[in-house]
Each structure stands twice: as C-alpha cells, then as structure tokens.
Image (tube, rainbow, N blue to C red; front, top):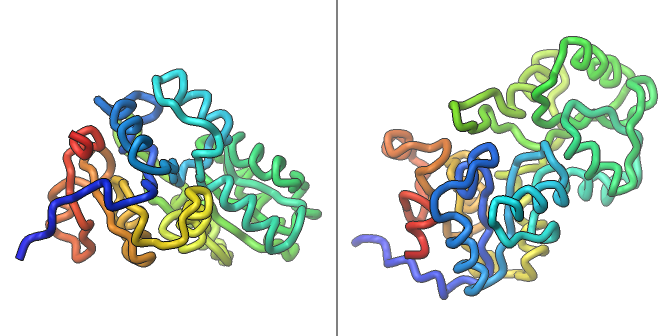
Length: 262
C-alpha cells in the first residue's frame, strides 16, 4: 500500500530547513520565496537551521533582501538554541568559541560573555571557516582547565554553490580526536532543537508539524525521533541515490520546496 497523498492543510506548523531547501550560500533556490509564502498562509513557519554563522537578525535581514518575508523570531537555528540551552542550564556563562560572528552574537544576546581559555567554563563549537591550529590549541587549553564542551551540530559538510565544504562536524571531530567529545550536540537532530522549534511555532503536538529538509541524518532523523512527518527535498545534500541506500526514509520525497506547494 502506497503512502497517502501529502495534504499540507493537515499541519499547523512547518519546520523548514534553510541551506539546501530555501537557499544555497545565500543564492535563492528557484521558487523558494513563493513557496514559503504559501506555507505561511497555511500555518506557522519556522526556519529550523543548523547554520550558526550568522545571528537570527542577520539571517532575517539577508533573507529579506533575497525576497523572503522572514522576521528574526521565525528563525530557530543552532546558535540560538545553544545560547538558550546554556542559559537555562547554567545561567550567563564565560565561554570560549570555535565559531563565527553569528554564534558569538547569539551567545552575547543571551547574556554569555567571551572569555580566555583559562577563564572559560564552556567551549562552544560551531562552523568556523576561519579555524586555525591556534584556535584549536586555545580550545584544548580551556578543556584541559575543566571547561565543558557543547556543539551546535555535527553536520559533516556544508552546502555551497560550488560543492560541499567541511561542516561543524569536522570541528567536533577535531575536539573528539583530542579526547574531548561534546557533552551535548544541540542542533538537529537533537530533541532539544525540535522542541524549541515547536515552542516557537506555538504547537505542542508533534503530529501537527511537518519537517521540510534536505538531510537524512538531521532533518529526517530528527523528525522521525519526534514522531513528525517529513519531506525530503533534493535541492541540497541528499541525492536520490543516497535515499535508495538508506534505511532512514522521509514520509514524502519532493524535487524541491517549490514542488511541495504546487
């Protein structure tokens, strides 16, 4: 028996990935702004992303310039999630980061402060395209002084218009190789990430959420763990060949987010 036809009216919230679904390195994917508008008319849309390179405000500003009607509060990304989680668990804390401006800004907005390795209580690892051996050495120093490690996500790669580049998972791998694995990885597919996204959407029942993403190991796995339906689009990381080899399957498969709302 085949899968039932997708009816978007069955959902109150849409948790939509960013990179590989709506954009690729701030290049708009065809029909994505129009698709997002149609989804917004049907329910609450949350941009649920593992990208920690920019703040929510910066992402919203950039997306608006690309033609997306997006406000900062619609964005729940790994930098926001980790900043909120740390605040709830430990209060405002001194941190040392392996990451970019977006991670730093979200941490500071939540009341955390940047600290030298000797004073940091947490090392926060995210995507850092300016990573150096010196930064890793300073992170190791903080960890050896008792700091605990948190990571935004463990995505092995990051999509760009010219192909895949190393993702935050490569940095997590470097820390693990030094003997310090993160005590928590807060982005997708963690339950925490999806719970915070649900709260932002104002829904309590996972069955009322539809996850739309391009990665099996984050979007689709996280949706499955939460009991949410999911749509995998083929405009990002996962290809049809990957899907055919995987035991992990989405509820539905679409060529693109634009095809989803046709």
